[in-house]
Image (cartoon, rainbow, N blue to C red):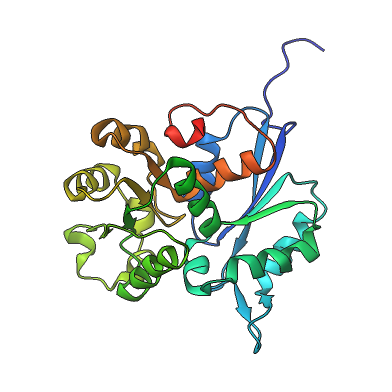
Length: 265
């Protein structure tokens, strides 16, 4: 055999399993952009609406939707370092206690020794690590008024009080569509970063002490450093928070450069 051995992206340091929305490409793309060497990312796709697990009548446990159950069954044999329910909306709509309940249910399948989290808990941990108490909460344009209100309430219920909320104006091509129609019509694949950057900069003001960009299907990690430099405040995003939390919870202290000060915490 001749020639040097090539990088095959094998997760010799850590293997992460993420449950993501079935028709989204952003979570995998952003995770892979930020993932340090010797760490691999593996996705299970879920096509159900939010939340991805329903409460029982006593509201003391949840039942996984079929796709989530199927993905968990497959992840169980993959020797993962951590698993993440990568769906902001599920945490928001599940309500207080839902994150803990779905983690308990997944632990029955994946094993209690495995680190399991949700995007909601990841964002809360990241905000705490960055010392953000009153973020400007930025939400994607496919979130209607109901989920915007529910999302803000989720953070309030967990001790974080958004200073304001900003729903991205999608522009004239998409503005006439109902929010829930924008992603199915293709906005998630045509989204541009410059309008997001400009709208955040224009909207940010005191008493906000940082920025949280929620929604794992919302393309944004490429502008984290640029926003932090412009506004001189920490920026947390959904996929960034989940990768950071997975690394830290699994004992991986690898450095990740270029995607915000969170990775220095």
